[in-house]
Each structure stands twice: as structure tokens, then as C-alpha cells.
Length: 129
Image (tube, rainbow, N blue to C red; front, side, top):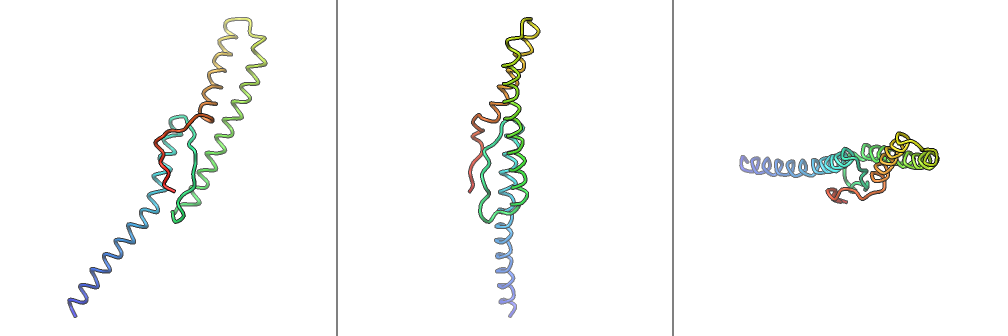
């Protein structure tokens, strides 16, 4: 009877360890992916978001995170478009060096915003879907 109880305890410990591994994998995967996305955002780029795996946890949080990234990207694209309009309107009026330097700064800002929203993303992101 003692051997049977010991064997049952070992099987239960193995089963609990396996379940713990699966559960931590379902939580750690989304956290890892989001940390890569945050690193890409910190580098001034916008990652290409992809959905989580079917059984991953933190879906609601990830959906809100993806929505926030998409809204920020759209806002940046809109600002780049508005900067283009401002530059086009001011270029004919820029007769002094200071005005031309200011337009050049606006052009650099526009280029940076376009590159962040339209350019390729970092290759560090792997798809785990």
C-alpha cells in the first residue's frame, strides 16, 4: 500500500509539473512577444502585429495593446501627412536661410515619421502563431 501511495504521489507530481509547464508557456509566450514589440517601439519603429496562438492567455491585454499600437501608428501617419501639407505650403514662402532651415527640420521630422510607420520592421520578431 505504501508503494502504491508513493507511485501515485510521483505520478501526481509529474502531472502537476507538466500542467505548470504548459500554463507558464501559455502566459510567457505572449509576454515575450509583447516585450519584443515594446523593444521595437522603443527603437522608433512600429511592429507588424500578429494574433496570439489559439490557446495563449492574456488575449484581452494583448488585444488592447495591439489596438493602442495601431492607433499610435495611425496618428503618426496622419502627422506625417499634415507635415507634408505644411512643407508644401511653406516652401514657396521660404526666402531666408532660417526659414529654409526650419523647413528642412520639418522635412526630417516627416521622413522619420514616415519611416517609422511605413518602413520594414525589425527582423527580431518571430512568429509563434
